[in-house]
View 1 (cartoon, chains in turn green, yellow):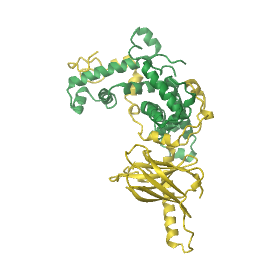
View 2: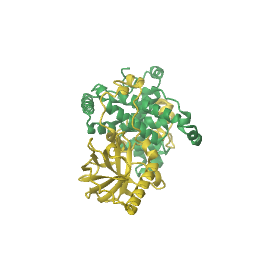
View 3: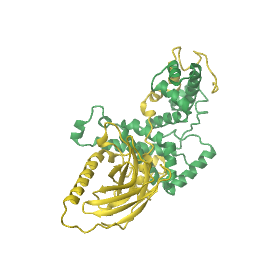
View 4: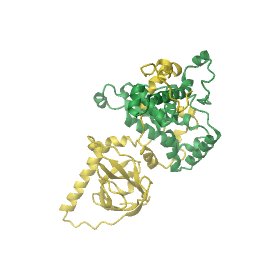
Length: 215
Length: 240
């Protein structure tokens, strides 16, 4: 995991420090807060890896339970993201492997597209990309996020989005422009390093605030 | 960059063409695979909001969980995760357990109806106060647990629980010493409820009441919502 550590203002670092300490004390509110902040990210990773909602929920549960139980080994103040992403990947791998060891008769009954039948462990870099995309989505405000979802997931045109949301097409266009600029800034670091070097774009890691992790 | 309120004329958004569809510009900037991820439904799914309640129910933290020493990402990547209670997996076998519970209820009824031996009167083994989790404000209640020949009879008194209809209902669960959950029955309101379980009392560590919603077409194996509204811990020294 290399680039999940993002720049965090001192106030965020202080909040993370307090949250880590609360986790280490076993406080329920702390684990709820951790889930509130990272539940969607962990779920995106596990769902992408396992392609099964139920197994992804199980992996997500295991991730937060492991994080909670091992909070005393987490250095307070560090970014939770790389730590949780690594645990999530590990949990999903374990569950995927467990499914792959199902009895033969169960495998015979499994659909041909069952993820357990064609399971391969994703790399940390693949997990990092999923995490980063989900994080970028979550950092959009809700209106922009919905617009991006309609564009990318549902494949709607600006006119169709305007009709769906009941807003002017010009507003859709400006929001789309703004949202994609932000996404581009947040995610451009995921391009190959050679691309960044070739482009010489000094802003690639700028306002997106992404810096290399420590490992 | 455009301001939030800027309204661009048609054709001025460089991320779209005249038809208003995405062009390759965005994919060029972030990479085609990233654009593909944005079109992947998994990126937009949300986990159940009650999922964390099941994590908390499985707590508290176990100090020194030897197999989960993950102080940094590198460590976590190498260290095997300790086997964790498969909370969600429980849902897969829940249908069978619901059937077993139903059989227990029928068996208990049969015992009550046909017993002529005059079994000794059952005694209350535990009375506990149900503690609200905050999911529903201003609710409380108590449970009385009575070991009977067929298992456990649980008298629930929680009249402050608002009645649930229209596909919604409450469900009682016992958590065992191996962290498994056993369903003990469903109900609309909590004023006077009797629940049953074919479980040894000494194995029960807690009881929870969850808020559920019937899922059309999957009544036989509907999963727990994990939305715990009331909970009571059982003392360690109970025995049937």
